[in-house]
Image (cartoon, rainbow, N blue to C red; front, top):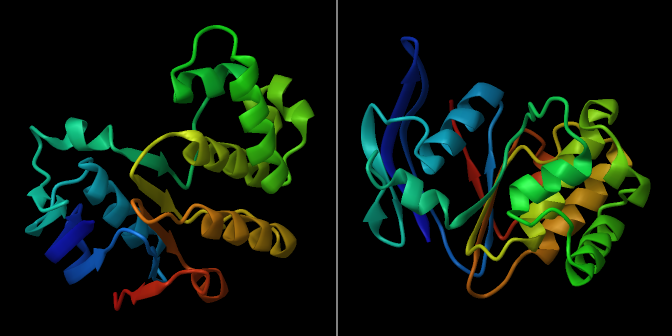
Length: 207
């Protein structure tokens, strides 16, 4: 499980979250619903150990995340950011970087990738495309497909439907639903109340 307890987060003197507490349990999909994109991103960054809390704590499986342990905990997390700054890279190269593969993907891995892409309505031709040439909604779904392939017990997504059309929002939320398993934590942030409905538990932020 991942837990945030009595957390306050302020950035550049601006309070984004105050006294925030919730637990995301294994075997469930947890949606964090809010109206402030900056606050949602700050919350995810706190879980990743990228952003310190002004008050409270974040823990994974009962162990508090501190600066010295953050990199260790990140190895357990499949992280899907809201924005992607990958320049001068082909999608195939990016996938190898994110998945830690050798120069050429194994045939079995590629077969698994096509299965994820089919579920996310991604054309196979995107594999050889230059990353910057793809629209933001396709980029977002490609990174999401990597999270589905990694063998991680925690899947943490920041606003995974942010750039999606209405049709593709349904594709993405259906895919998120497929990620649920008994021994993994699936957690995502969103500003879209309809997207949040795919979750078993919805946590509403008040700030």
